[in-house]
Image (cartoon, rainbow, N blue to C red):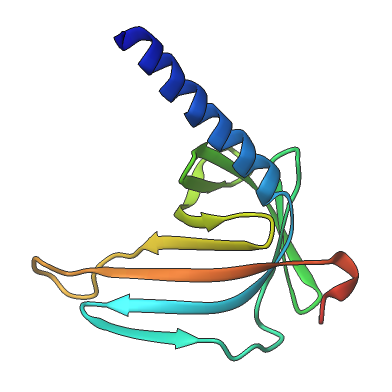
Length: 139
């Protein structure tokens, strides 16, 4: 009985990853960024030219576009809820927890290092994105 359950769980995990791989491909517009620092939060939803667009390609390449400039890197979905960015050598440069990913919205959470020394500190950033069409970029 255990073996079929393990196989079913593994199949569901693989299905979730492949679904995320399909959903993440495309152009994403930054909608807002929320920062949480030890019980205090701030949300920035003022859109300006400094906000990035992220284009995830099927081949694992990632283009970040901002104000007519772009940066190329790579991405990898390492599990159904984990996304990492890689540099040209394959070294992880950033890691995110995927809170939501579907054909229209993407929500990423990134843990951040504490500002002060000591215990019981919690800092993170949550970025909210919506799917954009390539011709609909305001840059």
